[in-house]
Structures are given as C-alpha cells and as structure tokens.
Amino acid sequence: MRIRATVAAVTGALALSALAVPAAQADDHMPNLASLVPSTSKATPFAAAAPTDEGVGDTKITSVTVNGGKNIVVGTTAMKSFTVSVTATDPEGIYDAYPVLWHGTDPDNADGAIVPENLDDETVGDCTHSSATTATCKVTLIADPSTNIYSNILAGTWKVWVGAIGNDGDYVIRDAYKTAKVQRASKLTVNASPEPVVKGKTITVTGKLSRANWDDNKYHGYTNQPVKLQFRKAGTSTYTTLKTVTSNSTGELKTTVTASTDGYFRYSFAGTTTTPAVNATGDFVDVR
Image (cartoon, rainbow, N blue to C red; front, side, top):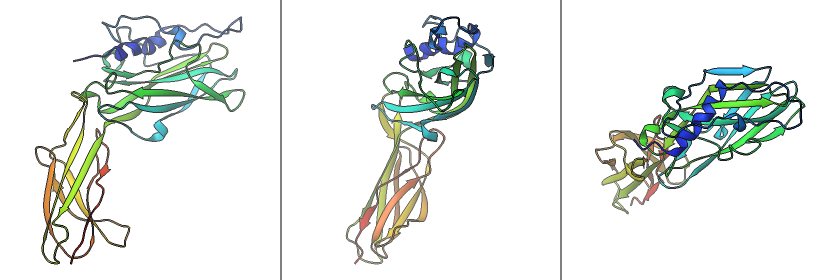
C-alpha cells in the first residue's frame, strides 16, 4: 500500500489531544493549534494515539460544515478544493480553529488524511467573528488523486477531526465530530440508434457507466450496477423511466425499445456510497 506523506502529516494533528494547552496566556502572543502539534515519524503514522475527545476550559465547537454539505467527488487527475467551516465559542473569544479529514477505523489505524496546507502558520483558519465569543473559521482543503487520494480503499466515509482554541488558551478537540463522504467521480454515456427511425421500429440504446480508479488514475467500467433508461418526449421537460438495465463486466449498457415519438433517451445512475449519481446527456431520436 502506498501510504502517502499526507497520511503521516495528520499524525500530529490527531495526537494534539494528548498535549496540554497552556492556560490563559500572560502575553499577547497566542499559540495556534498547529504549534501544539508534535513532530512525528512518517514511518509510524498515528503512533501517538490520542483520546477520542479532549478539552481544557470552556471552549466549544458548535457546528462543522464540510463542502457546503455536499459529498466530495474526486476524479483521476484534477485536484478537488473544498471548504470546511468550523464554528466555535469561548467566553474570551476564539483564536483559531481548523479541521482534518481522516479515513480509517480509528486514529490508530487511519490510512488516509486531508490536512490543511498551512499548519505551520500562526493561525490556520480564516476566522470571522460574529460576536465577542463566537467565530466561524474556514479552511480550504485539497483532495488530490496524485497525493492524498491514492487508492480506491479511501472511497466512502471519512471522519472529521476538529479543534478550536480560545483567546485564553482553553481548547477543545473532537477526533470524529462528524463524517463526510469522498467519492470516485462517475461518467455515463448514451447513444440511441438508428437516427432517424421509422415509428414502430426498434431503437437500440447503448452506453457506458464508468468511474475514477484511484489505483491507476484512469476511468474503468462500473460493473453490475442498475441503471435506468429514461425518455423525455420532445417539447417536454420531464424524463420518465422506461426500464432498468444492469451494466456488464466492462460497464457497458445495452437495451432496445420501440420507436413511438420524437424525444430524448438517457441513462440515469442513482449512485452508491462510493460513487455519485450521474445522468447521461439526452440523445435525441427523430421518429418518422
């Protein structure tokens, strides 16, 4: 397994909860969360296991939103940039907050991580203060199929580690505040023929369902999946399902229908936990 350097990078972030954060600071220089992360060996990711949750004082995390509530869909080459917003409160105000996405059964056995690139900065989150006690800190994370999205084993549910620190040095950490889905991008094609066709004759509708393979950074057929064949009559805006077709061993789709009226044929895939829903662009058939 090609464990990428990014996996090791999150080791310290998750181990943060094993540290004690100083109480109220005497000077005006506040440590950021990243400065509390210990250095760790890349050869032993997650060696320093942290408790599930930890906190000092009265800092609280009230909400976390990943990618606007949408799944994170990653293809084979392009990096996927997305925002995570962390809202936290502290009677003395919020100094910083940031998230880390990690994949695995628990922090000791994590096999993937998406980490903020600016962990060494004085502050990591871009924080907007809605009041003297509350702030929402936004962090941009990047899912990259050439680095931290390195294998198909990472498709599906990820956990969201999140930490926040108050202006007085109080802090709170949640190893798995919530979950988010990282999915393999999907593609779907359709072709209806012949075009044009005589009314009452047979139309053959072919297509292919494929999805990103993060093991070799190519698209491969998604096999044995139910896909709906749908039709939209010319001049209307709604598709109606005609039948369900199962993709074969290479992701190919093929079925026949009887020509009745002008309109558009498309295939529609509902998606799975690891792969998003996708619709093919409708193919128009002229029936004469």
